[in-house]
Image (cartoon, rainbow, N blue to C red; front, side):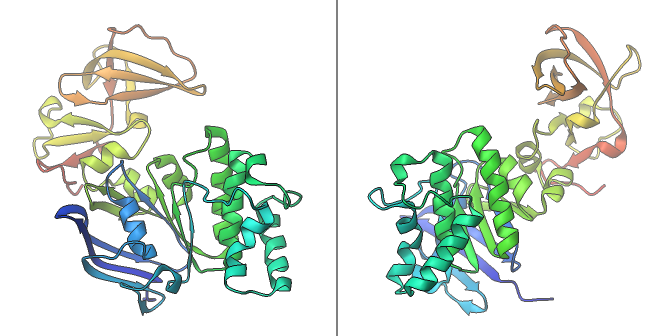
Length: 338
């Protein structure tokens, strides 16, 4: 098996005794796109700062491309960074912002021009060379930050919530740009986000964190179809997985909690359902409507129905589902086999 490009071994970081992250273990293949996902305060940005060298760990090792860089400065790690704040110089033009780092490294003018042209071409910024950041839209400013990372030509790029300042339409557009750039350039990307749509649509590997610990590492499909615990089950997916107390569903006493995705729930005729629920809300999304259901034993129960549906709140609905679509969790919230 090939040596991982980035290897994080049992990293921990604390501030004045307060936990930042603990027991962080990661093996990141070269050329992969890894998303660090989780709610605010879960430790994902701390993990990224430890990778970058902006913070140093209290315990553990960080190895990048075969070199132990645990205590090395950021400049020694052969990486570039893209931040939530674009970190552009307002008095410099687009071109000057993009090549600023190359000038600092005393790269020759001819090579700077060549790298600049390629980066602007890739990011769709040709023709904007002389504009100042104040004359650009939010999406264009973020593209300048991406172009700056591209000209750095580093094999590892760390991104800390780079799209959170953009509106929804721009986020979707720039998301595709970033993924295409990563594939075309063959770089390794570690990408911090609290947005599961970004993580699930862009990443080869998702690292879901909570309270400074990794809850599950795997492909987007693994986290969606085989969540390691109830936290993963409820965090990944829109709508999230419903959790049902097993006593509410006869025949499944071996598990404390049963998980069920909205697409696995079917509305059936009266008398043919496995559970009788009350409608709590309807959420129309264009191609489908999510019907929120309440049941004494369930939390977050939803059924997806095609098109526009109007069902009055409080109306009874009977639902059914196949046994093979159920997920089982023990009394600690951990996934059970089967």
